[in-house]
Length: 428
Image (cartoon, rainbow, N blue to C red):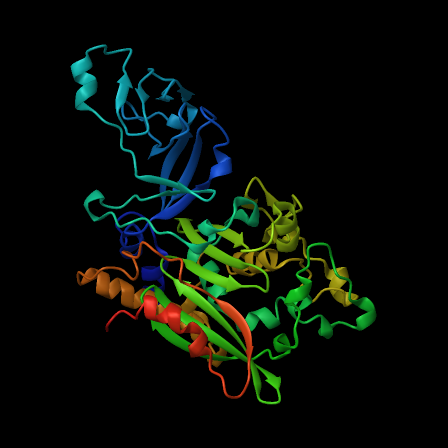
């Protein structure tokens, strides 16, 4: 349980807030590459940490990220013309390139005037289908991070962006919580709870994710600090002294890796503002081609009543479109379909910013408690002059999650050793 003051400290991300200042030390994904589909395509507006930015792809294919307000008199650059190497404000015709250089000022043709001014633009990296930016202090810009999903062929990787009307911490805590997987996601993980005659696999179900381990709904958690944050091992009993171990890395800022049998899922919870989060779900397989359509069906995002224009649109106003008939007929535990759909509904149902001073926690919440301690400690350290967790790691490719069965003479730390040695815990 957090105090009201601690809750405010962790959930507010605007400019000048403690958490907002800390998060501005990191690179963040701000858009999918597909949102800027071609050269000189339409500009888009995207929010990040409470600020508004315009993104555009120029004639050479370069992506620019700049403040939405025009340098001249504040009109939105999202209304501008993207043409001939830059973006032009339609109000007075001022034109800028991706570096912020002022290319043209029709109402003031003096070239010396243009040389004195530059638009506020931000560093950009476009990698593996994601557009990243850094909006913190320029002199503190960290190295760009490389993740393992960049190393698979493009056809073996799919990315979904889901904009959810809930604070980032609610979404991130859901990702850190292992005990709900065997309960909320029962249709995927524990179909045995259903009468066998009622079990109907839906298109997109992860059939090889079903295993006896998920029948243990109260896993034992073992948690270790790392240089990027922490990882936890969820230990579930299989019988005969055997254990299933699911190792999940939780990394700053807002990230986790979820292991699946044939692919790995890297998730970034990116705060748009205090009450909205962009969840980026990156599936990557070393060996298999992946399908976006299949991913959307599996996530429960293939229907427009749940997901439209990258936004999660089911809400309390429409009862989240919960299928009560399927629940009564024991065809569905939750009345929802798909892990992403179920997770989003839970977070939105808590309200925009959940008051954690009211909750009652149990031992199974240990990884969630650890996440909050990580963030509170990160703020204290940062305000004392220390570098944020993992901010200077350029190589994140050795960070791994896994889901394995172990015998009595084996220990999960042996499997995690290379990963732990490469990202040693931050000294206290």
